[in-house]
Structure formats: C-alpha cells, structure tokens
Length: 375
Length: 226
Image 1 (spheres, rainbow over the protein chains, first blue to last red):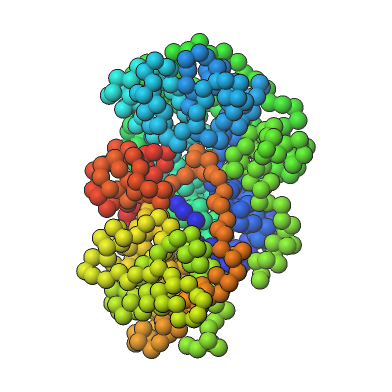
Image 2 (spheres, each protein chain N blue to C red):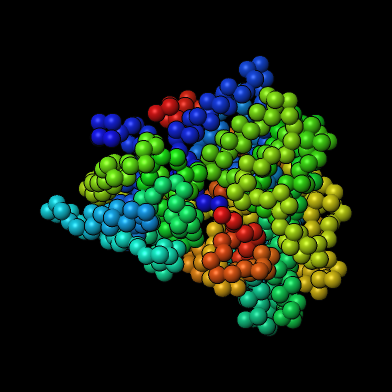
C-alpha cells in the first residue's frame, strides 16, 4: 500500500528472521515463489533474499505483466502506433519494452504519436479531446488493472466515444500458476500470493494450489515485514503439516475480493482460448479479450494488425528467469549487453522485473547483507 | 526513563524519526501535533519546535491541533509533505483515525505513546515506551522523548547533506501491483498523496466523503476499512 517505516522495523525483522531460521527444516531446501513483481521489487530493494537462511530460497515468478508480454504483441503495438492519425497510449514502462524493431519510445522518436498515461480513463479523455484521431490504449496487467480498463470501456460506450479502442493484453493470475506447478523444471514448496490482485479476485481462486497440488500459498503484502511474515507463515504450514490458502495481507484483502469488479470484468471481457507468455509459452485461457458486446472498441478488430509471432533474441534468457529456473545474474547478457538503460529482455525494463530489480538493488553480497542486518 | 536508560531500539527509532522530520521541515513541512487525551502535550510539542531557544537555530513551523473533531481539523489543515505527530495511547480512536488517513493527505506520521503498542503500520514512526504505568504520560517520559526529537531534528539541520531526501524510485503501475491510499472527497474525486484526483469509484460504490479506498490506475479497486 505504501512504504511504511514501521513495516521495516529492524528489530521486528530480526525477530521474524529468527522464527524463519527455527521453522526451516535444516535438512531441507525450501523454495518459495513470489508471484508478484511488487514483491520481487521489495525483496531486492531491501536485501531480503540475502537475509534469509541459505536453505530458504525465493524464486521470482511471472507477476510482472510487462515482463511476460511476448515480442510479437510489442510489434503489434508498434505497428498500431505508427498508423496515421493514431494516438497510441500506454503505461510508462511499456514505452521501453523492446520489440523486434525497437521500442515504442523509439517509435515516438521516429514521429509516431505515442503518449504514456496513468490510467485508461486518461486515454479516453484524450479521445474525447481529439475526435478526429483514433486513440488506442495498450491495456495490460493482471486483475488489478483489468477493472480500470473495464470501467473505461463502459464509460466510453455511455459517452458514445467512437474514436477510442483498446489493444487488450490483460492476463489472469491463476493459469500461469497452474502452468508453473505443472512445469517439470521447478520444485516449489509454496507461493507468496499476489497482494492487490487479490483485492479483486479474493483468496478463493488459489484454493487449487493446496487442494490439487498440495502446496501452501500465503497472500502477502508489499512491505519487508509482510514478506518475512509470509515466509514464516509458509514455513509454519509446512512444519505443522498444513497446506492452505492463508491471507497475511488481511488489512487490505478480503476473502471474496471485489465482487463488483469481478462482475464488471465478466461483462466487458471474455477469456482468450490461449495466449502466449514470454518464457512460459502458450497458456490456455490465461488472458482476456474484449467481450463481443464491446467489439466496437477492440483495436484488434478495428485495425488489420499483423499479429505475427516473433521469437525472443537468442541471447536473452528472460524465459528461464521468469520460470525461476535461472537467477537474473545467471543470464549470459545480464549487466553487460542487457541493462536497464539498454534492455534486451523485458525483465530488465520494469523496476519490478527480476533482472532490473536485481541490477538496481540486489548486488550486495550475502555476507555483507548479514553484517548490515545484524548491526 | 532517563537518557541513560533509553533502550537501543527506541534510540534508533528516535534517530530515524528525527532525520525524517528534519528532511520534511527542510522541504517546507508544517508539523501538526495532536494529543486528544492530554492536549498540553500537543501544545508543548508545537511550542518546542516553534521557538528558536538556541541562538541560530531555526524556528520550525508547528501547530497544535485541538478541538472535538481532529479528523476534520486535520483534513483541512494538513497538506502533502506535512508531518502529523500524535501523543496518545494505542487505543485512542481519534488518533487512529487521523493517522490511518494521513497517508492519503500525503503526510508522514509519528506516534508517541506508552503501554500496549499500536498495530504495525499504524504510523510511519512509532516512538514507544513499553511501560504499562497509566500515569506515565504525566511523569515526563513523553516530554523527554519529544525534547530529544526536537534536539535531534536540529542536529540533522547542522548537516545539510542529510536533508536531501532520496527520490523515490519509479514504479510500474501494473508490475508493482500499485495501490495508493485515497480519501473520497466526492463521488469521482479522491484525495491522495499526489493531490485531489479524478478517480472512478464505480467499483466501490456507494462511497461517501471521508471513505478510504485503494486506487489503481485511476480506479478505486477496494475500500480500506478501519
């Protein structure tokens, strides 16, 4: 919700770390995946990874929507942005994501009218102010962001804004979790569940994780103590032989989520039969398209987009990083050819991408971090 | 409590709070003080910061908020970048209400008290005496704490290099799973740390002025209940 010093209290952190050390079985290596990019950012920013015992490992998941957008969709966005009379709008970080022919920022430098917005509602306002131009919004994000797009489309229809459309790339949280659990590459002991996504979807959609796969999951807040408390809750479950969905972030997340948001999303969106995720490949029913009732606002129907699938650059190992198979620094181009200034892969673009977070904050040696933590 | 018995943890909290306070003052903040059960403490803190008792020291803007409705007083007084300091027990309902709203007003919060501690996250900085003695507020422990806070704030001012706040790192709205606290001003208008914004409240309706919500990409996605 916000960075709060009281949630970063060193004494409380030491207490939790002590509990984690006691709870972690000494003869086991515990591997937990944090699903959300916000968690990855907190973990690296505060050096949490280095403070945990050596047998408690955090693996970074695919919860950064910018990171999982496949290159072909970026190319489609570039194509849209370069159409005459189009004002192409997107969130700021999407501007720097590389496609096969540069980024939206570079398209803007070449003369395309690309503007970043804070909200899809801002894009709609732009459309009402520019009735002679086509305004396209590049919609992406999980269930936290999709409601905002849904609200915008309902408003666009109410206002009769004919020059507004959405290039929909919203994804959903449950299918990639299933894909990861089905992956033979990973042996995970549990998950830190996403925080604000869960304000919308609630805790119930995660029940399959313990019930079908026998893994615990704890919905976690974003402050350092939230992360540590959630890791301790996961270890407590394992120690006690329990396996459940627990909610550490109960100050914000309710079991039922936001029913009004879910209902509106049901009206505005429909599930795509399949969608490509960078690193995870095609996952069925893992993304949203506009419902047929809102087809008039669907940029994919309004424009004859190329829709070509493009392979990632060979040097880039974002796929392995996103699956948690590789740590960011194990990628061949990490910190050399690929940096936040000149990203090759998506994980280096967003501050919440595992590579960018590690590049910016994570290069402290484990021993140094322990010294700092112990004062 | 004497200076000699100030435990290490509280000393660290005090130093961190003083540095933040100095940085906020340097950036133009006003300190708003409240102590609903012991108003003289609020007035004392304000006087302490306002008067330049040592030659060459700055008089720092501080005001005691008093009256029957401190939420209403805070709402109209506090501006983004200000600091709200409360002297109160952990169960004081007015203080809890003011401090949980303060992030939506853009304010940093400090809470001085004793006995049972407030819940984690109730304030940005909690300076707490764990002594359960209910008479402690009258014994001088709090006075010592806020005198130290005042002195240490001035110590920070002697080191101008400390006063520049680190710019907050940029975050991606979607990837960070952003959620900003906001206080509803009117339907479709929400006050956040960034000012009053147009925010769709469709998904959390009905809302009333004063309700707290979490804002993501221009839409309130959930209510934040007490």
